[in-house]
Length: 134
Image (cartoon, rainbow, N blue to C red; front, top):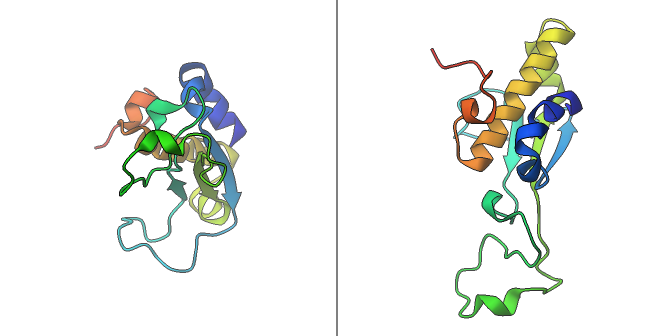
């Protein structure tokens, strides 16, 4: 995983600073009906800091509906910033890869997909080497 992230860092360093990465053995037992994959390889937790708002402090949480004056929220400790998280699922990734080289490519592709989704761009924008859809 670190190798995959390091490949994206030269171009996306600022944006990657707003993302935490983790690994879990398997996905949750409850399937996500919106997910086209029967067994997901990763999940994205968007966090409370939008990708375009990574510099500076005092970010607002994603859900601030019903508040009249948003400036009153800045520096409230009970409303901490939550970075986005990309969680990879170890066993499904291992099951879909034949060997270490294919696993490394799969991990990179999954990270690119999740990161692109968080940014709201196509995976090819994040990594020009990402395989084009056929």
